[in-house]
Image (cartoon, rainbow, N blue to C red; front, side, top):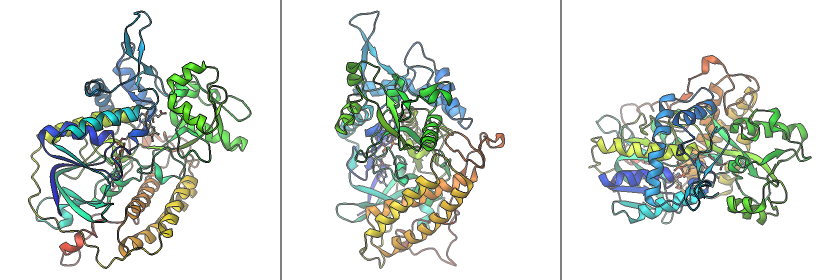
Length: 560
Ligand code: FAD
Ligand code: SIN
């Protein structure tokens, strides 16, 4: 049965929840989320939110730090807007009851102020945090407020499959986005959801890589859906690898926050040699791309499987109270970080590119917005400054809700054709999905990782095209499942990354290609933008309406 609303939000991380709260006074909001409502990258954020809240800091300094990290590719007007509006959005969070960590003001006994952390690339302490579990605190605060709002409904275990546009439906009106088809994972039913506007807040795509700090939800669904609907996707080559993920066979994706280095931790080779000063004057607090590449180079040089992160020179009570979650988790895996260094490796962490939007979340398709990690606003350029993503999500979600409140978007007052499974049958061999999933992730890690070459990219391109063919076949032949939806998106996201990487013949920020090791001034300020060619109308007729559901997407074939 079709369900309509004013604003349909895909995702319940910081971007989706904050948008919902801001939009709810103006209309009915429905949030679809593919697992339980708290499961998101947001929930795992550790370091905090970068914003100018101290008299010793300034908007200009934060802007300059962001531009420097972005390696010449940030959109300066977007950077200025987001940094400028950050403090107001932090006040919003404080009003909602978020509990950021405070500290005693040394010269005014008994009085407290917000404690500010420091991370790589920041010239000042400016990271608001809730010890080392900031994301959990953000998610808790937003979910508690959202769940009390009469205008907001959340449907868990609903995975969006594809966007619905009037163009795809063959309606005689200018193309706009009017909803999504989504799979109810519990019942197996695919339902149509109609809306005046759809807001993609579906997060990033770390799962495209074998090793990642991201939870399982991060399969690039937003960029993949938007691409299939015809929206431009930009800068996907800029995948941020976090320098310090715990190295342990059983610790799945556990991040060791950059804030640990912010408090003085030192990176060493396994035989105890400090190496960062030879790579950058800021040492361990250099921008993330530089630290991740330095670790990669040291691991390759020494043949070691990891490097070490050492904070043992700090007092144990400080470490335990500032990083309680990291301390306890490391202890669980046999490392007491107050007494010994922790083994760490880089892992895929953040998608700097995504669905091309302006600073208000507008995409090129009317009625389709994108906010948070799935969007590419131009804030991060070629490399995101630490803790700028939660900030971006807050500011852009707020701005999207404001502009949507002013737009006259028509309601969906027509019946969307129900999803048709055609003659698809139940998949007989689930091992195929598992195998393809692993193959993509390993291939991306080996060929499209921290350091790239033209040859590796070409190899990746050939592999991904071949895998895409198999996945498309599987997609059409078998009844849709959540794993299949994710696999299809993962493969397309991988192809988008490879395609963008092949289009940039230089090294800049996070994209480092040994065959073009220097930045090329001709590429400064140039985004790599890819867009699906409009599907040719079938000779003389459109897809019959009953086919529109199943065939609502194009594959990424031929992209790279
Ligand atoms: P998410 O929080 O990832 O939420 C995405 C939501 O979309 C989820 O609810 C997901 O289930 C849902 N979803 C996805 N696809 C679909 C679909 N097809 N249908 C329905 N629902 C869907 N950034 C900082 O600024 N500071 C930090 O300290 C920090 N620490 C981090 C630590 C870790 C371990 C990680 C992984 C990231 C960290 N980041 C940090 C990055 C930051 O957490 C994310 O960029 C940010 O939380 C993204 O928010 P979002 O709302 O865009 O997406
Ligand atoms: C961290 O705590 O190191 C993550 C910060 C970020 O990704 O911005």
